[in-house]
Image 1 (cartoon, rainbow, N blue to C red):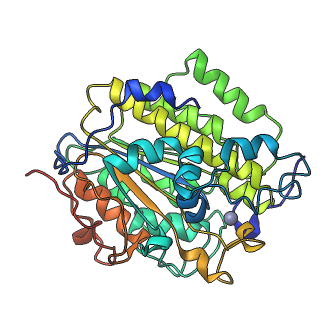
Image 2: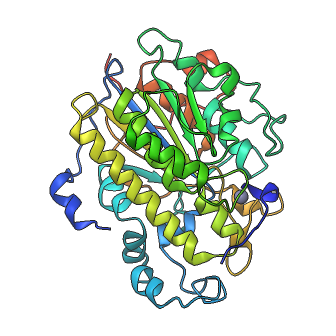
Image 3: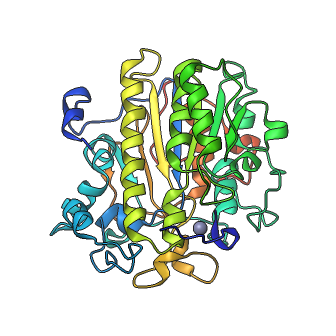
Length: 377
Ligand SMILES: [Zn+2]
């Protein structure tokens, strides 16, 4: 659950195999995206701090008190390293071994790279709406489940020639259904505890639906990430959408709960899910060589030792986020140092540009595409 709305009911990698499956390309000039064939995988994980993304686990936060009073020895062994480079690779191995070397990542404030949200609220629904529409909207000022009055870039693209019926969205948080405006958007918008019923029910999907709806709930409005992710993967495999959106939530929930151990584990699982998505891409000719993966968060959080648990207007530094991407059309900038700030409001136009459409013409308030995005014409 997001921000103040969340009831804080606090409850009690195999990376090496991948190297042979997905080769890391040497640094080279980006191939332009072919907009007629390009696929988008837009993934967000809620409230994951740039601090952990770029520095890895913070040993000062990895204490028994921040781990539901359980020992942290195993977590220390798994995630604590002597340098930020080693620690972040331990936490998010796919991000640092594949996405960054083959693409780019903004937001390392230790290197002068600034990525931030422009909505001024620094909590979830305003962040999702900014990402999906390309602009802040002062009406989106709470996490209440109110259908988005704005049209998202997904809703618009889904009606464009060549892209009709190509969008799908999945969210662990129930309000993702509202961010896309499920009643109006015209595509699968599966969120929270809702079973997926818009595609033929295979035995696997049936089991996922049962697990999602019957597992005891910690958060009233948000599932664990696993059923949401594997449900989205079932859809991806069945329907091959060109515009795929996935929002995961545990990184935010466990941080609000003050459970740094589970927060780290959730971030590590997000990385594993990205790897699974990319394995799907490599195994499917429609997608291989024609897919861009974008990862970001809806908001940041405060600093250690206390404010890391929270975010919002009262924690100004929680406006800082990270944005990572790889695929055709994405510059091979790697880890960006310095340079101009980038914002969450640039994602919608970036998505549209990669599939050959101009979101800024449609929605003048939207941010421009990220710098250096190239498409063939
Ligand atoms: Zn939150």
